[in-house]
Amino acid sequence: MVAYKGGSTGARESSMNITVIVCTYNRCQLLAKTLDSIAAQTVPEPFKWEVLVVDNNSCDRTRELVESFCVKDPARFRLVSEQQQGLSHARNTGIRNARGKILAFTDDDICVESGWLWNLTSSLHSGEWAGAGGLIIPVCLGILPNWLSIDEFRTIGVFAGFDLGAVAGPLTRTPYGGNMAYRRETFEKYGSFRVDLGRTGTNLQSREETEFANRLLAKGEKLRYEPTAVVRHSIPECRMSKSYVLRWYYCNGRSEVVDLGPPTDARKLGGVPLYLFHRLARWTLQWMVSIGAPRRFRCQRNVWYLAGTAWACYWHSRQSCASRRAKRGRR
Image (cartoon, rainbow, N blue to C red):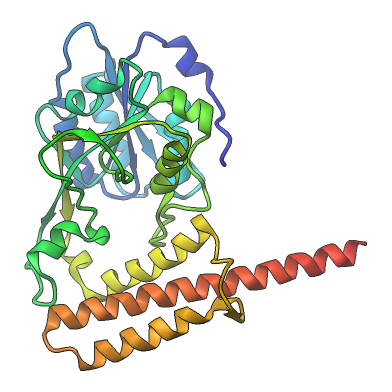
């Protein structure tokens, strides 16, 4: 668990009800649309809200852009910097510097729809719910490739689509970072986002928001699904390539092992469970013999996911052996 380091800013500004945290890295053009859509939000009186942008070492015009919003509306917009590269570092900086009692998170390539902020956070003010997640609609900015169906585009994790239907209610799965909100006290009680998870530069490692939400659910906290809190996630053409999707699945396999640890109840070879070799062989064979581009690519995705899982298990085994040798050497 990552310890939460409370900041004096939040304590001084206890009258602030909601802080929207937007972490950004070199996406000033998309960020402008994100901030415009957030600026258009309204919440009922007497609730107060702010927008906190965390710049994670951008070298484009990000700072200039955000400062223009701060000048236009200094009571609403603030900018802070996080020098340690990585999304988890940036989000944790946002948590420390936020003034709100409820912290809403979205990404720098997302446009929020009208009513998003209040629809996402209104149920959290009573204290019954620890957090909430909303609907994420991926929007393809290029041509959908023939190896990907429209249903998969809307649902698979690489494009961060999140749609549990039209009925609000308890969440039994974890929300995605592009559309989630938590009460500040949950971070004070359970810690912040793990910095060994989450994106860093071009590294596609993830699961930091999944791990945090699972931490809350394991303690019996209640999370709510709010389908009327809608955001649209822009998917550029470069992310619609096979190489990007396969790399995401490989990193997702590695991320799961970092988050949950390797399986402990399986026979292993070099730290890798034997059943992973069997599954790799099976999905590789299906990939080779399958007919139809979408079906073949589904098999290929499974191969890359399993390869990432196997590599992470092997690496964990090596690290564990090195740690044991180091302990013996100190005796």
